Image (cartoon, rainbow, N blue to C red):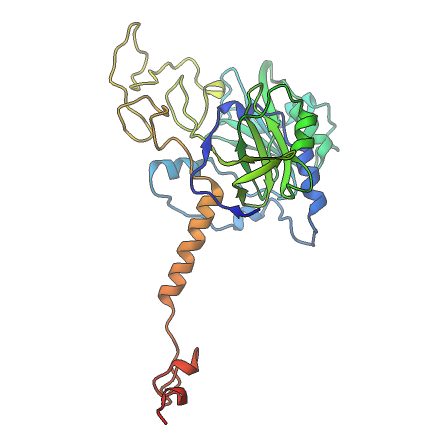
Length: 343
């Protein structure tokens, strides 16, 4: 069946972030890859990567600020979401790492190849590890002790790199996870690495190897529509800031009206809603906001490649042979070519 990169995707609930993880999908992708030396860059590769120095627009700046240094491609990644008002900018990263390793029941020798870094914009921690057992252990952590304070956390394994996600709706909620895997992961869907249901809803997330989402996938013997997953821009309903969600707000005691942005609003507060994303007359990140979704990476990549191709075509100048009057790139089309002579 044809594969297409889709410009517009379909939104899903933020419950998708509660998916426990994609450990099996990592294993399937590793089995399909032909590894060659040097394919997986080390942590220092992120410092050599070229990225736009000055992204334009508030949303692009927000996305750029949320990026992490490039981590090894073949690692498992675990997102840890601290709750209870922990501010990742102010807490000791060394103490948090020690607390995570201890809570995961790992010894320091077992975790010596792991990488822990903070995403200050999203107020989360990201763990990169080459070991599946470490990723599984981190994903089970429910709380960590930093100093004398006990913090609740939620953790999950993210999809492997060089993959994309599609959304399929209308799948019977009573189907088990094992049955979902049997229906989607088979030879008729050669690019499918895994499938996960969004809690108890009839919507499932399908993970594809590579950067293309098909218009349709096989669910058993049924051909079902599949749409590109779109990620919503995080907006905190507590402090009113963009970039993080309410469950990981670093300032949960700072109450801001989510509609108009007024600090410490009184009871029975009336206001004129104003969106912090687009400036429209609606609450921030409301369903009426057309700017609340990030453009999917595969769409951004396609647009970037198209711009580069157009630029190369615009800069191309056919070479002329000195004194001969015909085109070296296409000798049969030049004004002095023997093919253009009469008789």
